[in-house]
Length: 116
Image 1 (spheres, rainbow, N blue to C red):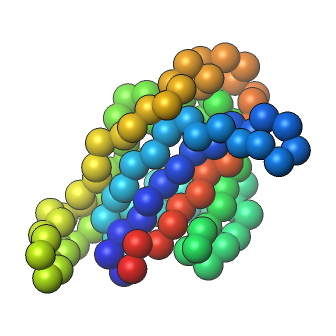
Image 2 (cartoon, rainbow, N blue to C red):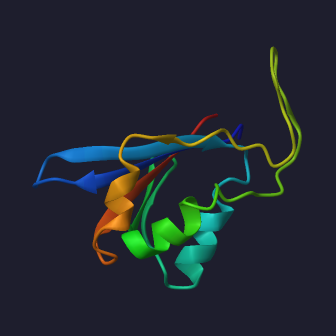
């Protein structure tokens, strides 16, 4: 397990979804989502890493993402041509941060893709 790529989507109709933001994290990067699911703050839709899916409302995402990405205490990862520091997380790339500032009950889909 090398890490995770996260994508947050807003639904726009039955089949359309808009990418709100995305980022990557090391191997323990799923901890924040699992913790929120355990606390009943997000819904774990399951998945096998290709992807794992969660649903969260804007209020929870805003509180989590606006102040910086969740950090995890993952191990050092050494690959053939790269090194990921312990707890590594990339920068977040926003496509539409403003949607998190609207209706706090609006729901968003979070996909977490295994980067192995």
